[in-house]
Length: 160
Image 1 (cartoon, rainbow, N blue to C red):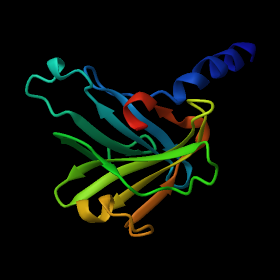
Image 2 (cartoon, rainbow, N blue to C red; image 1 turned 180 degrees about the vertical axis):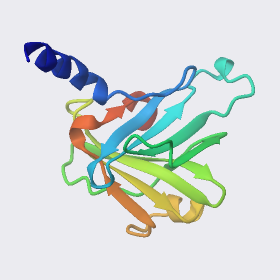
Image 3 (cartoon, one colour; image 1 turned 180 degrees about the horizontal axis):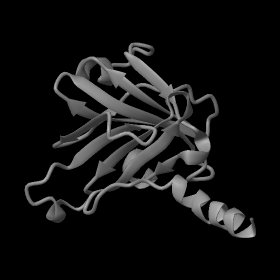
Image 4 (cartoon, one colour; image 1 turned 90 degrees about the vertical axis):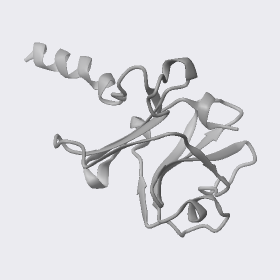
């Protein structure tokens, strides 16, 4: 019984880790409890490592099933929208990975006084790049909340 408890505790921290395949690294990842899902946004930061590879890829996995959605893109884009930062020290950043006319994105709110202190994050899908980049709020086709304890984020590549 003690062995099982020790094993469970040892595995808990790894549950929040992202599974980006090298040379890609985690830009953002989180669990989405309402869907029993995990989403990962992976990026190759060093252009020298790309060598014909896409800069980013996106994965959405439900439970233990194979990826429900996986795609690669040559770049990512920023959004002007906000998730609702209501404190002067907070900044909300939106990053989107385009796929055809759609944009799969995450929005993350961070406290600038305590970098890395993420208050919340959402994963959203938009029907066009224009819908993602304009300042109109609430025009996404899907909005899912992340479990705050599962968020993994490379704030250096996210926050302006």
